[in-house]
Image (tube, rainbow, N blue to C red; front, side, top):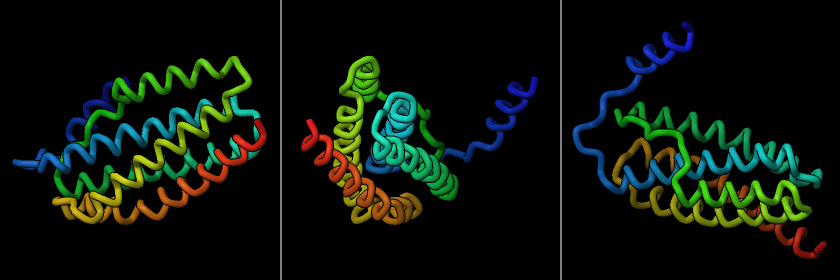
Length: 169
């Protein structure tokens, strides 16, 4: 019963979709939502299957920071009166997640996870830089600019971890 009431309440809480959301904003928000979920989901795998204490620590930070990023994005979208997209992975990220799950039974999980994080953060930093500079929706642009230093820090951490993993293999 609680779940039904929560679903009904959420329906009333959703902001009204703005008349015309620029396609650049739709694309950015969709990519940010998918990327954020991928970071959290794969980091949860790392907490279960990661062997290195550094990987475990990195995964904890990714979950904490990306959970906050998701909340901040929802706030920005609410302010811009834009309905948030479904919080789900797209096909490409589903495939990456499934491939990473295969490593849970092998020794290569840590390095595969770190490599995926490196690539995901390279992509995120590029997209956030672009939107922070050129995005047409002020609230979403401010969100992108505010999160960019965190993503750049994550990228530096992922690069360092990736270098360590490669030097130990």
